[in-house]
Image (tube, rainbow, N blue to C red; front, side, top):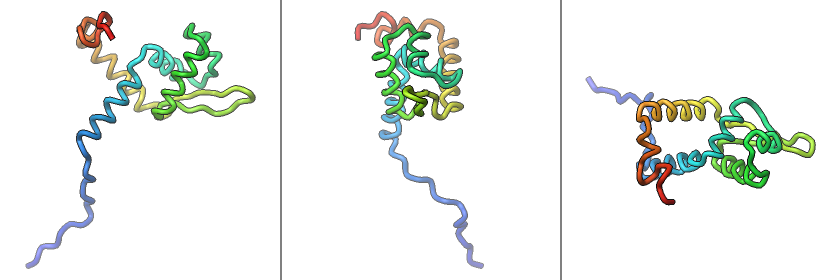
Length: 126
């Protein structure tokens, strides 16, 4: 009796591990600035205008706009026009908040190790 191959299961797409790791590193770099993290945390509360973000974060408008442009280019935020202003919001809210929550859990588990790291910690020369 001849066996038929099961064609209902699609083959896994070939993923280049180096490309995937590079993309992950790029994503983490986009999250690697305290101002960008603060913006994301504030946008988790809902849509905001740049003026709202500058007032809340105490940053210059140009700084907030530059960080929003970075986050937009990375696909993490988007804007929609509202009158003469733009309303900014998170994209992919649940997965992004999952990543940030996992980072908080990992930081709690490692204690001060990351902050004290001589390469990436707060005292590292950059």
